Amino acid sequence: MSILENLSGRCARTLCWCAVVIAFTIVLPPSAFSVEKTWKGTSANMNVAGNWDPSGVPTSSTTDLMKFDGSSAFTSPTFTGTIFSGGGNAGGLGGITVTFEQTADLSISKTDAGSVFRLAKDANVTIEAGAGAFSMGTTGSNFTLNIARNESGPVTQNSFINNSTNVATLGDRVTLNASSGTQGRANFAGSGDWLVSGKINPSINLGVFKNGTGTLTLTGANEYTSSTTINAGVLNIRSDTALGAALGNAATSTTVGSGAALELQGGIAVGNEALNLNGSGISNNGALRNNQRKQLLGRRHYAGGKHDHPVGLRYAYD
Image 1 (cartoon, rainbow, N blue to C red):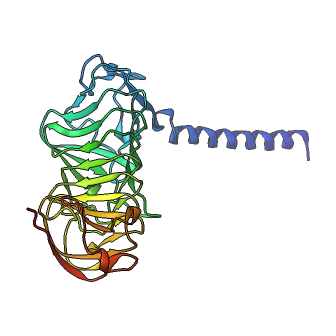
Image 2: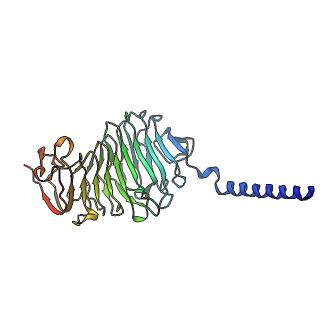
Image 3: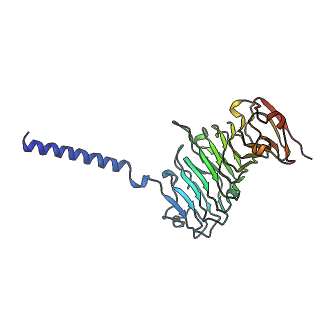
């Protein structure tokens, strides 16, 4: 091979390599990566770029993460419009983290009607141990909290994790929904408690899960069309339809794992709910409990065994 041919080959390979690098940088510019944005607000307006560090409103189209670490004295931040609604079926914000440094109570609300606050695939709302009480949608206008749709591949979920000793709340202004109206999966976890008083929509049709040692309390008129699984801790229900659509079948059934408990409170009537009760509950206090009277309901029948057919439950309190 001549020197000229050798040089030509090297140049060709170099140009090819450069073309690949150039193409790569065009496809994946730095702006495509998510950024953690810390709330530093000098006002309560979450739509203001200067209230975040680094500067710029968290962008749902690039799955930016929100962090609250006590850096701002404004602990009741508000948002308007569609600022956090982008990202498509699997997109949205990369999560919300409330750190242990956020010792003051934090309450997020919307000040104009409608629109969506969207969480991306596998994005979580996490409250660390030591944080103050977190709430979303307890005041202000109604809005939809969209979790990601499972479109393909392994099933994913959005988790709401509270490890604080203070109750975390999704208020009655919030409707929990899945992007594009189907295939949502919600998990409530942590050692702390959750209160969900808004509605859970039919689009949450891949399951509602309770994990962790805390208590999840559902008080809304829920319409989700999937099963409810209590793997650990307590699920406390305070409305007739807290467990969603009651069709008396496995698809909409409620399963209580060994060492966990389902707790009924408030004189509610739950009908046509298929129950699968395992074990004898937390500290042998029953897998199905009447919280009002602290009475162990059905323990004689369910402790250490299963009950897996449609039942109508009616509990009236004095």
